Image 1 (cartoon, rainbow, N blue to C red):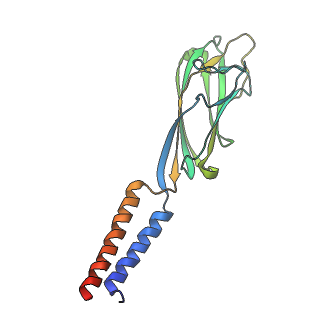
Image 2 (cartoon, rainbow, N blue to C red; image 1 turned 60 degrees about the vertical axis):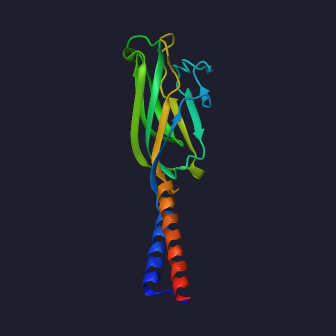
Length: 196
């Protein structure tokens, strides 16, 4: 039995909703521990421990970590809360860092002797970076040398938030889509029963 014009219109509308849901990108974010026990550390002393996680005083010292399968198709914001748990810098000294994501420098910050210990809150927006398969590698890279014998700083475990778009529909959108589809199927079954 052919569908009525109103049923055809309803099916066309549903097809548009399905296409929209499947092709729509949803805003999303992911917060992870960084540095963490899974981080790769190349510090100035080649030491990696829990508290006072790394010791930084030479150019090239870094912390890197890859976060795989994040579900984020692209990322355009990064927030880093980095606890500085040790500060042995001599007066007037500082340690400079670049923050990188997938090899792209997003920005930089410095921690000085005057800042003592505390948390570096680094937030940056940037042109979208696409992660292959939703994977992203974060890196904190020291870019200066502290003069010999004038101290270092150390980090403890912190947190990193990546924000961007996910190509995976939110569960609520999928549930709404399924309910709508079930309703249309039910409507079609009722119409067939009435005409039979």
